[in-house]
Amino acid sequence: MKWFKNLWQTLNTPAKYLTLGSISLTAFLMGIMFWGGFNTAIQATNTEEFCIGCHSMESKPYQELQKTVHWSNHSGVRATCPDCHVPHSWGRKIARKMEASSDVWGWFFKTVNTDEKFESKRLEMASREWGRFDRDDSLACKNCHNYDSMKWDDMSKLAQKQMKRAAEKDQSCVDCHKGIAHTLPDMGTARAPELIAEVGTGPSKFDDGEEYFTALTKPLFFSSNGDVEAGTLNVATKVKVLESKDNRVRIAIDGWRKKMGAGRVIYLEFGINMLTAQLTKDAAKTEGVINGFEEKEDDMTGLKWQRVETELWTDAEYLITEQQPLWDYARDTFRSSCSVCHTQPDEAHFDANTWPGMFQGMIAFVNMDQDTQALVQKYLQQHSSTFVKEKH
Amino acid sequence: MTAKQLNKDIDKKTGEKKKLKELKALGFIIIVLFPVLSVFAIGGYGLIIWLIQVFGGVIPH
Image 1 (cartoon, rainbow over the protein chains, first blue to last red):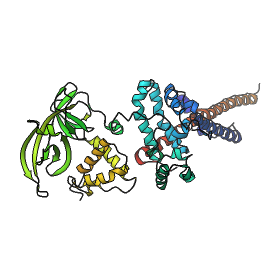
Image 2 (cartoon, rainbow over the protein chains, first blue to last red):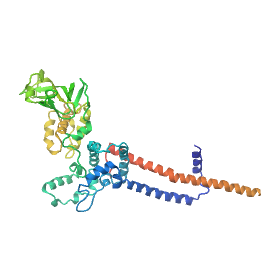
Image 3 (cartoon, one colour):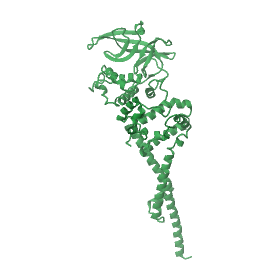
Image 4 (cartoon, rainbow over the protein chains, first blue to last red):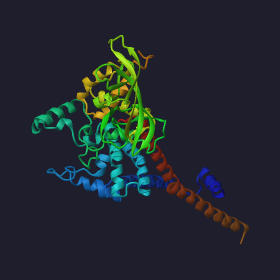
């Protein structure tokens, strides 16, 4: 502490021997040297050599880039790592550098140091990059590519149509152009990968008697090991696990069905067309699969509804413990997808039986996989005026 | 040696010491303290922008 006190004393009194000239000159020179040095250091971390200094970046993304047009093309202009992955404005660049300090963490703990580890994290990492591009409408692309400079005549008819529409609303490039510089994450086999990345695949062991929610639309089976499908279970549906066996679980599903035909569609509530499960005709007719209880008539349609309970088997996966993450994902998807073209209506603007028609009428305009579609529709119904009374 | 000469000698010695102290202080400030503070300030600025972007969308460029 003594040295600090001494130092403070010296600093706090006017200099007696050093001249004002020499002090200000050193301060000025050091200022220049520091600022220069700092920017040189930042610049050094913004080079490709620095990026591929890590084995995981050199062996995967860098090699993949070399197969693309962003590496080599007839005009001889190429994109380096930071051109796309680091913002160009000073403030956001510094913010990105701070954010990237977590990469040092990943490097230190060898998060993606092998091929397998990299591949298993590829979707997560790609989703993060896509998110970054989404947030600023693909500014990184637009630093070079410009809608105004596109020569429409050189494009195919279809490309022209698509690009002109995108140009009109200054659309984000990665909305369509994903996987152009690096290999696309495996999305062909996996269903609704972004949804699953968000909500997880669920626990590996299930507690009997506990309630779970489906994270995807799931097949139903008659037994724990048979291949015969008994129907499908809709996404975000509450089920009760009764027992686990052979990688499957026996689940109890309750709901209501319309007393017409085979009555193989089970809905969430009386009078509300919110899909819970859709059984095959065989399953619906098989004795003991669907157990019927009390009946009620819907005054609106004159249809008779019956409360039912059913017990069937499903694969012991994609059953999660909470419903809220599903709704959160659905809400974000609803807001971002619909607002591309128009202001999306409030969830509670329609009732649960109006939403499906409304939603299905619009679905052709957006790129949404089946699972996400089913989830968003269910989200809208669940948050419609039927259930959220106070709003409308 | 006269008393006057002796006094001058002592003055010179403490003067040398004081000058060294001032030089050290100056060196400490410009080589260690201010660069460290600057890095922290810029880092903090980056962190704030990052956090704003996390919660409230992109900063206009």
